[in-house]
Length: 205
Image 1 (cartoon, helix red, strand yellow):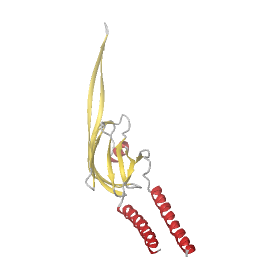
Image 2 (image 1 turned 90 degrees about the horizontal axis):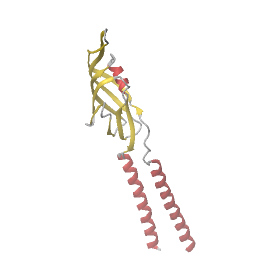
Image 3 (image 1 turned 90 degrees about the vertical axis):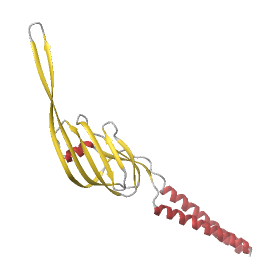
């Protein structure tokens, strides 16, 4: 009888150890990822809905004089105003909290205003002085409607404007999905079941 009791105890201890190791492995695999460097936004299905571009010439006059000669020169700065609406889809590898931002090319934009409407209701406003914001992405694919306007030093198409804006994402931390929660609950239920079995076994002894 004692030998049988010892054998059953060893089996139960083995089961408990396996469950504990399984829990450690689960949390090791689901441990929050370390923040990664910013990466360009993975865009698909770009659709330009409206577009408008105009040019403006600004004249700046300068003068210089000596005792016998006086000269005047005029410099012209040309800027191109643009505004357009676009729809596209953003793809991410992992659901979570992200930093979304812009990294405009140097000496390209005199003014830049961007409003991003995400299909889940989130709204992000960016400009040359406020270049990033936090968002929560709960799906690996999300549709975005963008309103983009500003002034550039070059005459660019909407696609070229998007390229020079250099929209990027930076992963900050993950969020738990319902499937993760259910897996965690299953593990807890298994632990409780094992401990109840052990309790019942020793009560019978």
